[in-house]
Amino acid sequence: MNYARIACFSLALSVILGSMGAHAMKPHLSTEAFNSWDTAVKYQVYQSLGLLALSVAGRLRFVKKQIHQWAMHAIVLGMLCFCASLYLRSSSTVTGIDFSWLGPVAPVGGLLFIGGWILAAFSFSRINEEEGK
Image (cartoon, rainbow, N blue to C red; front, side):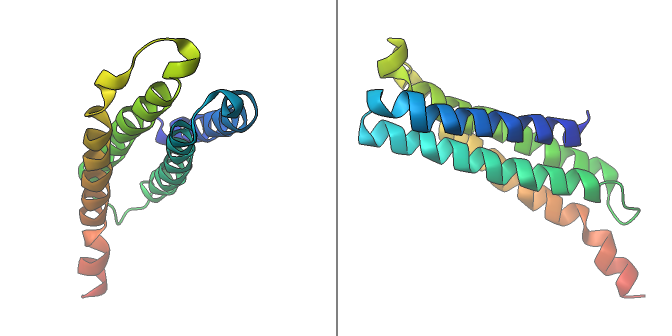
């Protein structure tokens, strides 16, 4: 997978969704729903920037490639679970579709974020091993 490309497209999408939320959706959303939408946008930006940085770092020889790949994969899945569930649940009043059943999906996304970043930390452990020599 080209995680740099995924990160860039995700950043572009977060700008689109952020703008859509602030201009088109806000008048139709409750304060709680808008805050949820806004949280999804922020997390998408943060995780996309992190993913972009990890994809660049993955080209270094000091990274354990397989662990690094799993870290990035977990972060992408986390964005899908966390952000998408918040976007869909927030937009229920606009779409007329009840997405409340997606409530438990956001915490799974959060756990994937945490796991991904912990895996990323372990993928860099070779740096410390090389510096210690």
